Amino acid sequence: MCWRSSLSPSQVVHYQHMRFSNCRRWVNQLKTTPEAFGRFDRILLDVPCSNTGVIRRKPDVRCRFSKAGLTCLGATQRELLECVAGLVKRGGSIVYSTCSLEPEENDRLIWDWLKTHPEFRLQSSRQSFPPTSGQDGAYAVLLAVR
Image 1 (tube, rainbow, N blue to C red):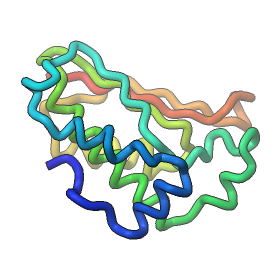
Image 2: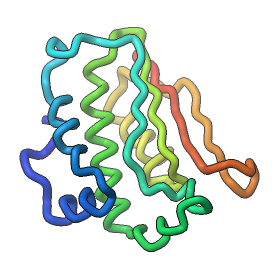
Image 3: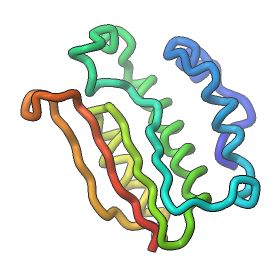
Image 4: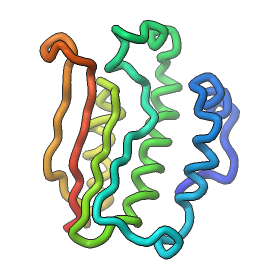
């Protein structure tokens, strides 16, 4: 199962605060079998994240950021990745992206996920770091099905 049947109180508060009220409904649709959607050659998974990469444009991110929120987002990101993994055709790929600078949402999450999904390999990754790039922070990784 890709999504818990009910959200914990902290998740409900988090989603309401972050204005992701429809997130649970959308993710529940992904719980269906691949036959319901079909399988795809490529999937872009731009996950909800902490937004730490866009903090210079959205300074309120500092007020909303917390370790508990980061943990909750990481669980949601893993669940979304888990859900779409079954929807990719053999030889296909997933682009996983965030606008976060946090390893818990980026490299660390991907490497941990790959340990339990040997059918995928990391083909490439990119990270934009605002002080050096002069752009918003972002992370993207291309995960290919073997």
